[in-house]
Image (cartoon, rainbow, N blue to C red; front, side, top):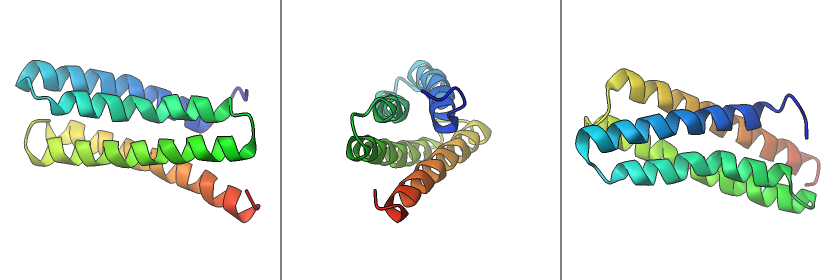
Length: 118
């Protein structure tokens, strides 16, 4: 495992922040969207970890694709809680930007792999 894997580090830190946001949503609004956000937001890093431990390039790519899908779902939930007013605008926008950064990194890795013939 690389000691300086940017997507591994960012997805882990993002998951920690998602846990805090989900706790805040559940505490303040008792809203069940918090569990959807928690599942999707922490799944990004879990699938990155599985990709890193993949048995082949195909396995790596497959797990990374799942991670990308989970980041898109997380992006959706974050926009939903922001636009419904359940989460402070500044916090929601900050989390959305972090999620978009993760999506771009994963997308870039996928693009590079496709260009190299996966």
